[in-house]
Length: 260
Image (cartoon, one colour):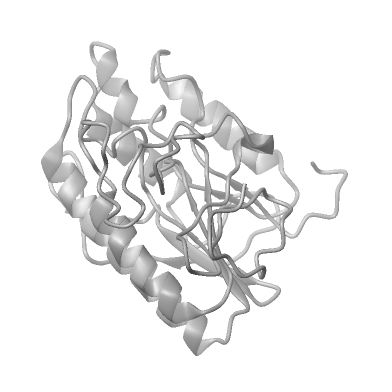
């Protein structure tokens, strides 16, 4: 990567496997990797980094998320040798171990006329399932994510951005295909139809409203994918210019249906 002329990089979560221990070495090693990159390096946490830590005795998902916030998000800049200044979410609050805390992992920046934003949205059900679901943590973070997403559209409009890219760990699912490990849902109501806890519908409904009003390309890049190159996917809503596309497709192509 350092041999390329990169404007920046963005890691969309999962520093390790979901079944391995959440040792301090996992996070410090990752910080070393980020620090070794020449270009600015963005990052958003993944479920393997904190949500799944409850699977192993002695670890708390909230404690691990607090650790990530302190280690990777202690400044208003990206990681990497050369750094970009980022806008950081301060309100509404997320939850930490002992109290409300700012959702400092949610970031926003612009490069080349495009606005980028990270969102702490976690697979497979946004912390509403697995061994230790936490509906209180989910509710606070979900509201923060919705606000950050809406503010990102407002920022992009005010600054005449040509497009927006959102980066998160989770594939929230956008239709009934389930093609990329995401939840299966009704493409009209966006309600999950596979019987699992739905940690995404409220966010997706709010996102759809914003996408339709924005009238410019919007990409949603996530880490929960085995089918597209580099664990990235672009997805969207029927009837908008946010079609479901491979990473190299032209996002300006009008979409009256899903594009594969």
